[in-house]
Length: 163
Ligand SMILES: [Fe+2]
Ligand SMILES: [Fe+2]
Image 1 (tube, helix red, strand yellow):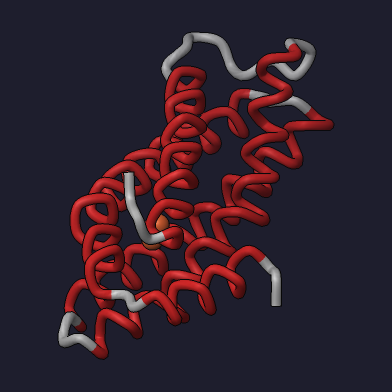
Image 2: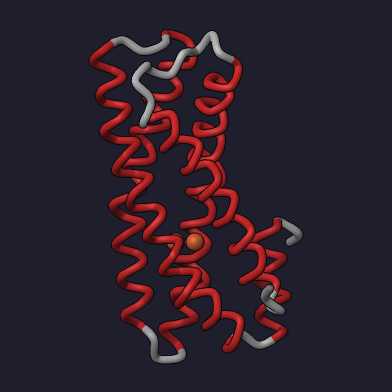
């Protein structure tokens, strides 16, 4: 979809995130709490912990450190500031959600912990979906159109850990 590999990589990660958010949303909408003896439910908790602890934080950090600064240098500071603010709201929500998931992986849910998980999870899903939509519409096309190929190679290596 994107010629620029940074845009394409982030796009692929956005799609994976949306798929995970859809799985989470489905389980939040059910009457019964997530059941850790159900392999599908247990996998959702594990995937949430892994995704938030490594992928999401790494993705946010990369965007802030390397992409929003690039946008600023071509005169688009507002979009970077706005997306950074959204990250700042989602980071603690994500940390809480990962912590609740980790606890539930071994202890399961009771009424109170399920209510908290639902509340935090629903807010995280809602914010993440909107955030990804904005980046798909505004950030990735702009990176695709403005980034020179030397920067693309350098940042791709930074992001994929080849340097
Ligand atoms: Fe972002
Ligand atoms: Fe993103």
